[in-house]
Image (cartoon, rainbow, N blue to C red; front, top):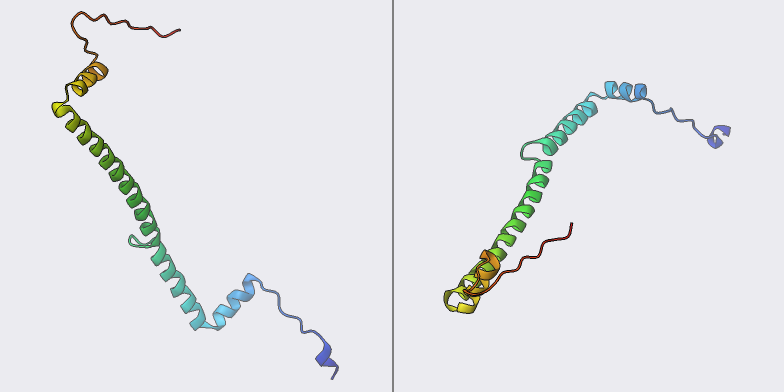
Length: 114
């Protein structure tokens, strides 16, 4: 009756104890090995989880590039429509972009300070 009140001492968990249990239970060790192999295959396969994550990030980058290119294309279309018949817009682009001047105008260039 005194044995009921004593705490049972558990064995310490050591690598040796784990290997002994695995040797004794062959089915558990085989299932554990197959599970680990399957897990590694799922994560590191060419179609695995890590490859999927990498492809998702590349997809986001490409979508951002496409969005920026579409915005630039929209701006260029608007600029092209403005240049089709508007002489003031054509003159503005010629002056700003190409440095052209009218006859009789003098151009002054300011040198930057050193």
